[in-house]
Amino acid sequence: MTMDFKNRVAIVTGAGGGLGRAHALLLAERGAKVVVNDLGGARTGDGHSIAAAAAVVEEIRAKGGEAIANAASVTDYAQVEEMVAEAMAAWGRVDILINNAGILRDRTFANMTLEDFRAVVDVHFWGSVHCTKAVWEQMRNQNYGRIVMTTSSSGLYGNFGQSAYGAAKMAVVGLMNTLHLEGQKYDIRVNCVAPSAATRMTEDIFSQEVMEMLTPDVVSPGVLALVSEDAPSRMIMCAGAGSFESAYVTLTEGYFAGTGHAAPERVLENIDRIMDRTGEQVPQTGALQSEHEYNMLERSLART
Image (cartoon, rainbow, N blue to C red; front, side):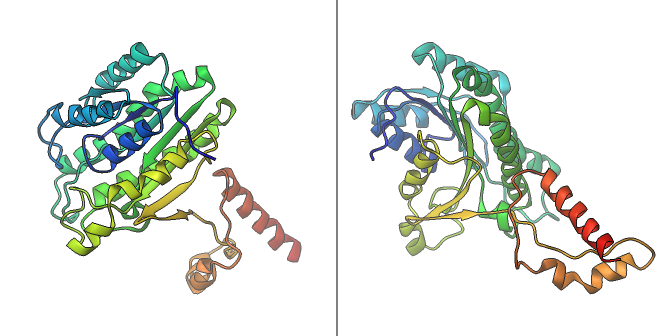
């Protein structure tokens, strides 16, 4: 089976370099028409230029592909709507959205200003919301859509000095979980990718040896799988150095502590049992947590 994206239209944000560029180039290589979006600023989000996006478009066109450059800020919904309208005017549809745009302003929580915190969340989370909202109705109308949110191990597992980044990256997982449910009847499949890649965003984190192994282009095959015709939905795909894994948010079997004056003490005394991962599950909706807890109550009542 060969993935073919002919006649598919994709929007890739933050595609002027790094991961976004790699995603855009591979999509175009497989036949997709691509909107290459990039604000063209520094990794802190400062500055603005279409040059980076235009350079990627030239790469695509030089290989016979179709692409247009766009410098909309994903934090500005009006600009995002204009970007989608431009894609619709050029090609009549939008099939794929890869929310990849991001900035870094790493500091410990104690030293980070609220202004910087909001700036990071605005790009990573609200940028994903804006772009997804702008294509959602079109995808519903055409009964087809593939959306990827870019999450991170910093959000899934934590990373020192990245409270804002980690919070935003976990927020898009929550967004994916609900959009997966709401998009099912329209064949809109929504997934997350958590990449390990050597880009200007990670140049201060990894050694040169590691950077040479974690090239962005080896993450992109996983992203193409997530936006393909046969894509899964609601997957958190981890990817790096050619390896691909799946991450999950799970629910343990837990312990019924009941109510009453001594309930807090019973909870603390049984923390290890509550955290025991034997028999854990992956609830398919949030309501299943409540259902599980009600069942625990019923079993307790049956024993008395």
